Amino acid sequence: MQTWDAVQYRVVDVNDSRIDAVVDAVSRTHMNGGVLVGCFTPRLAHEFDGAMSDDLRGEWQPARSMLSHPILRNLDPELQISIDADSLTFARLGGYTLEGEITHLIRSSGAYHDSNVNPIDARAMSRDFVNALSDGPNEHLIAYRTYDDWAPWFCGVAWDVTLLVLDPPVRRWWIICVTDTD
Image (tube, rainbow, N blue to C red):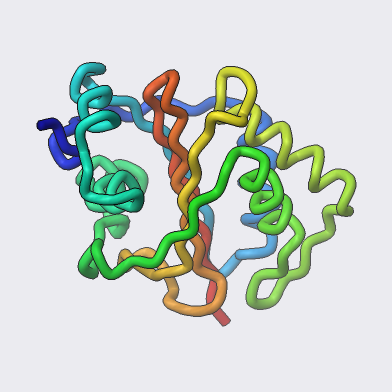
């Protein structure tokens, strides 16, 4: 039986203006914290495929395993899990709900700064962002959201959010982390 914990990943370089636009917009409102975005694919496709079909430890296990993976330190040295992964609380989102979640991030205020992106532009930016995460229709995306401050990088207050996005057909994980403090 293959589990998510056995899957090894490599970092995928991200160079996409649709992703940069959202990171810039959210960074402007979360200036005392920050935004991190990363992309990862498995080194061996059969390990990922085995975990997708064999790991029966529950629907949250893929997200917990990804947050525990040492590859995340490539984004920031402080992005290593500092609490028991089993204690994290997740909500599962589909691709279309993910668009709304990204729109909310773009439009939300940080600790001291309000968004200056109007709702119509924010919706277009979020749709483009989610389309950049997937190589086609986003209905197959599986997203996990947590507000838990699971790593020292987070400020540990109301503006902490992590989105993990799994694109199963292309075996790709995305992570979006946002934090701010007053």
